[in-house]
Image 1 (cartoon, rainbow, N blue to C red):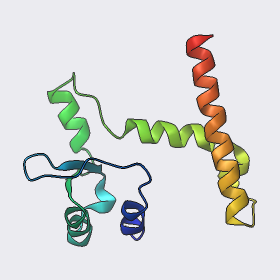
Image 2: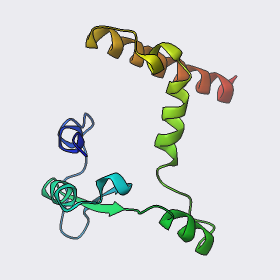
Image 3: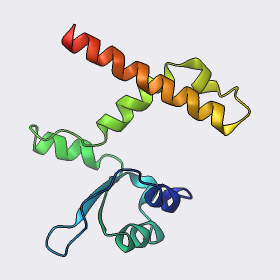
Image 4: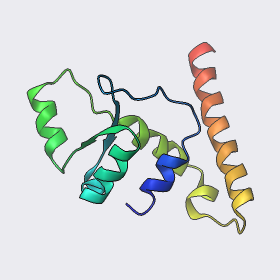
Length: 118
């Protein structure tokens, strides 16, 4: 919750400007369920979708064709956690940690491209 505002303000890729007919949707979990978080998301033009624990499982049982939207993020965190140096964080400076994080992401992408295209 404490890093929600800096994270939303630090988005690197440009996103479509929100309109009243087509707002930008933002999926979040129970950690962002408070009113201050909802206000911060709305001020930045997002329509918040905050799921409580168990709500996603119940929705999946009702509509089995709909897949969870947060799975992509959780999967990526799992791939990054396989790099022990990043998981334990031995680096003392932010620049070296960020460099290792970028290297790990590049390796993950390279491995995925090689497995798809051979």
